Length: 268
Ligand SMILES: *[C@@H]1O[C@H](CO)[C@@H](O)[C@H](O)[C@H]1NC(C)=O
Ligand SMILES: *[C@@H]1O[C@H](CO)[C@@H](O)[C@H](O)[C@H]1NC(C)=O
Ligand SMILES: *[C@@H]1O[C@H](CO)[C@@H](O)[C@H](O)[C@H]1NC(C)=O
Ligand SMILES: *[C@@H]1O[C@H](CO)[C@@H](O)[C@H](O)[C@H]1NC(C)=O
Image (cartoon, rainbow, N blue to C red; front, side, top):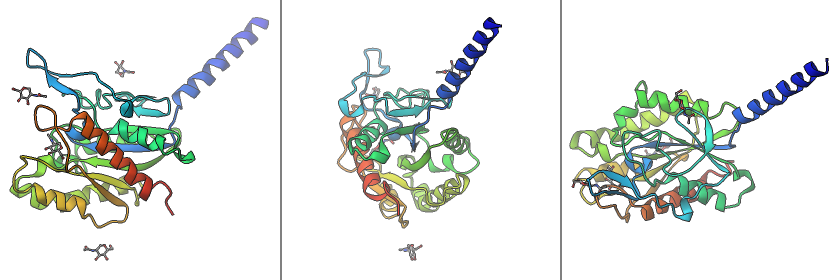
């Protein structure tokens, strides 16, 4: 009799614990999508065998914090750490991206409603906008992960979008506006979040060719009060001259945070 009570309570304790663990849930959820610069390549370099390696350097702006979680590839919340996209964009060598500096800058604002941050990394290097259109694998995964991120409560506060470099051809750059609008509208519809705030990064480049500016114009002039853009112009690059270095990723992450804090932190 005593023993069965004992096991009963042990079982109860176990169930409670499992439940609490399974339901670790950040209040403010941010979706991160786009291509390599969102995924993060800061701190990457070639080793002596010409294999791309991350240098492992994590500046304080990108540090882990118990109040910053990430939804891992298994759709489980865990404490976030660089490289944030490691198990998502796993075919590439990931380094520092804008996600951790974004989250740290949000916490630094010390807004009582923004003390618990959840990041949902979804970016994949080299992807074009049509690879994110409704029905594609990346789109479905974004929606699935977004839904999984709310299993135990919380709210999606914004989508952070850093993409467009792969759409700078003559043909694709013309279609970018229509494709981007459709992607944003479909996503808002499928997440049942018609006013989902979106903050995107305006791309810049030394060698993106003559049509890059078409993409920038679309990004920086998007006509929607719930869509804001920050500008990557002025960024510096790692040795491949293609990807933002750590310093510039911190700058972009902090710009994204400033845009969120000024436009979306306290919706009317
Ligand atoms: C994620 O799931 C896979 C397959 O179910 C498993 O092999 C792996 O250990 C899991 N990883 C983590 C971090 O839970
Ligand atoms: C990374 O971002 C910068 C700045 O927006 C851009 O110039 C560069 O082309 C991007 N790299 C890739 C591979 O997308
Ligand atoms: C911007 O959107 C508003 C509201 O939807 C619309 O009335 C206006 O004509 C648009 N402006 C441009 C330049 O497209
Ligand atoms: C690594 O070396 C290759 C070949 O020289 C070069 O194309 C690439 O940009 C380098 N990558 C980095 C991250 O430095």
